[in-house]
Image 1 (cartoon, helix red, strand yellow):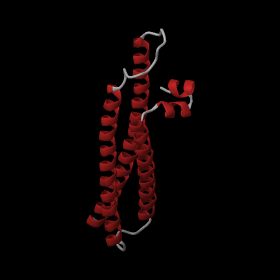
Image 2 (spheres, helix red, strand yellow; image 1 turned 90 degrees about the horizontal axis):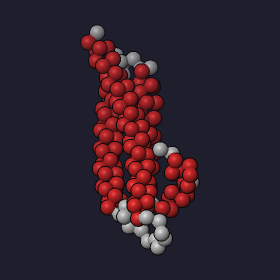
Image 3 (cartoon, helix red, strand yellow; image 1 turned 180 degrees about the vertical axis):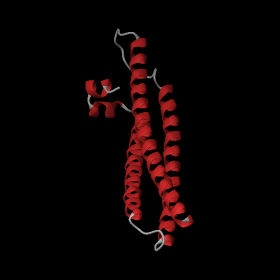
Image 4 (tube, helix red, strand yellow; image 1 turned 90 degrees about the vertical axis):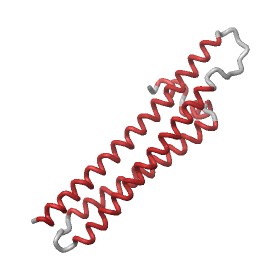
Amino acid sequence: MLTPLCSYGLSSVWKSQGLASRMFCLVLLTTSIYCLFSATKIMIRLRSLRRLNPAQHLARIERSLAGFRDLLANLRQVIGSVFCLFGFVLFWNLQTIGNFADHSKTPIEYYIFQNFVFQCFLGASAFLVFLVLHLSQWLVTDCANSCAKRLKVAQES
């Protein structure tokens, strides 16, 4: 998967992308930073909530958990919308696989294949980033749900 990146370098991969791909990469980078920052913030706050006594701080814990649920729902929406944008950009780029200006004796099929391999590399890289974002969101949701279950058990006791 890293063959295009290793053989051409990051700057040449960036330069060979179109405007839509570059904008998508920036959106994906921004989304990744936002999601990982939010997930880290929730995990740190969940850790501090575990130290609180549910009998004494019940309202504070419930408010925090409700805020976490809202933020996690927002993260799911952001990841889903950027995933839809990725599909649009990928298929937009696949339409232009045969577009190139070259007057050499190299067969056209070679350039089409190289463009296709490059688009597959970009797609695989984006899917890897989405997998990491999804797994981090899933882990944080699981931690928040387990904290809510512990709170419910503590209330029933």
